[in-house]
Image (tube, rainbow, N blue to C red; front, side, top):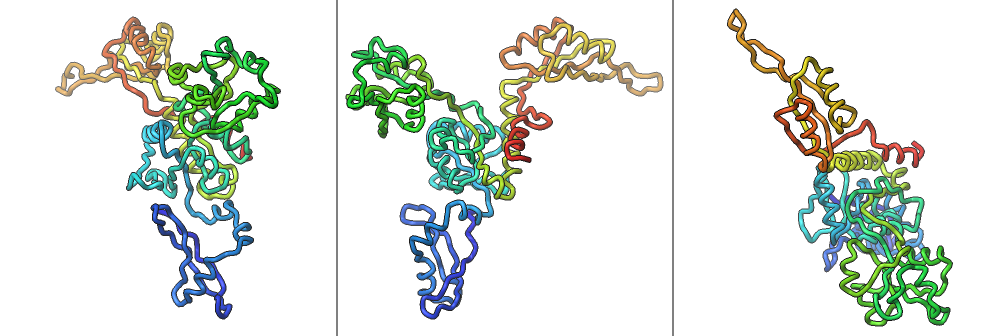
Length: 413
């Protein structure tokens, strides 16, 4: 549900008498949500119009941060398009945080598992911009977006820095032919004699802030950074740029366009990150608790990813005897150690006719990574195990995530 701001007081355009004007949501011709002022019952239309019309000076004094404090809901911004959007929704779903959007064309959704949380779908760059402006309170985007548009703003707190998807790096690439044929490193590139104040190295990119900072650190002034829409890989072949600065994951697209990465030209490594506004944590009731719940779910799921429970039945004299054999003969004892429990089976009938219970086996359980499942099974069998079961792990919850402790320390709690 979209929360409307409270009623505001204005002045009558005719007699100066106070009137009450309510701001109500509606949609424009493109379906976008806009806010319109309506006179409350008994107020004149002229009064509503007077309240709706504001001077430039009053608009300037109403900051986005002030408007954000009027909200009674928490907002989470998510990327609206692309692989990053798909991977983000997939991760949240795996953490039992399903984003529900009644209409696929709408940009507002909800996560029913967290009451009072609105989800807003935005361009990745706008997720960061609106986090800075106070229009949203937290976001999940690529680290590259945070560094390019956040520009190291202390208000942006990275709660989780490795969500495991969207992995790539920001790098400089040049043509593999012509004057760049023997250029293989960033030092080779900036040492080329043709670059000067009047003939700068032309680089097309969507990351002008990070690009400028990179070349400033190299103390290389003869560079011109420009932006372009669409595929950047075509710019060198068209003659509109000498090189590109773009995200690279596999490098296949570069090779297909006769481009090559340069050694020492990695500007930034990136993947999905979970970011929250420091200011919103201080001012928005409920945000800290929502941040903890999301962080705990994400952290527990990522810790459990590619982990499996391996359980084997083993004969033994006691739990201690079986535990000793597991610890001595296997390479994967579990999180803190193997879990050993008794296996009860039906025994011979007792003289009075009642069914007896006996313990011939013990169950030994360990947690192992996917890549070592068969090794652990072979070792358990060698130690006397049989009837081995393998089960995927969904969550591994610690007493308290280290990232949560770090966040509390960051905000002074």
